[in-house]
Picture 1 (cartoon, helix red, strand yellow):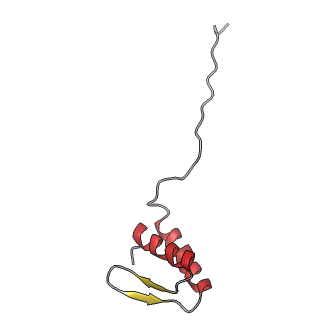
Picture 2: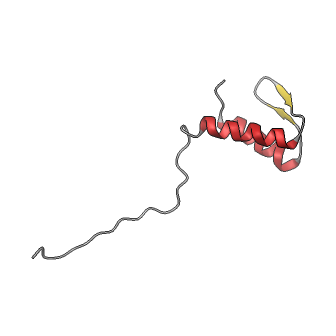
Picture 3: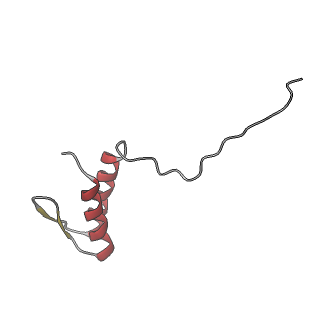
Length: 69
């Protein structure tokens, strides 16, 4: 199954509120525990991580100038 950012957001909302029932596009899933919900979220993150843009912080470059002597 291909997961989406929307699926990940639904799981993160459920974890934040303590809700075990998650509504995806056309289905509803009830998890047995918050721990199971967290494992599902981690699986979705791993699945979509190649699709996500990198979340890197700052980018820098070093430039050196001179006369080349």
